[in-house]
Length: 79
Image 1 (cartoon, helix red, strand yellow):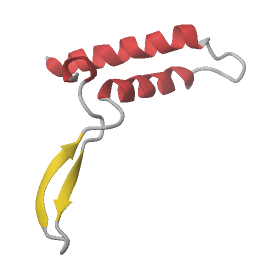
Image 2: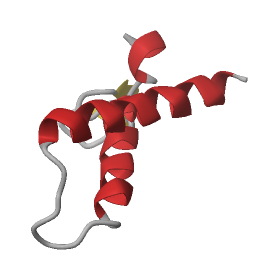
Image 3: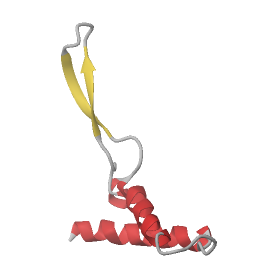
């Protein structure tokens, strides 16, 4: 999953505690939005910021363009 999506956008620690609130261990919670989705949302926000009300492009072209930008951003992180 990580190769295509970049992993979790916002990984957070998940602590395991006993009845007395002592930490027994922890893991990393990777549920939720992927880094690819986060990048695509930011790209879409940037694209839309240049449009005026009533001139927004159809989602059929906006969504793929946003994910192409996100994929380019993920690829750039590997270099």
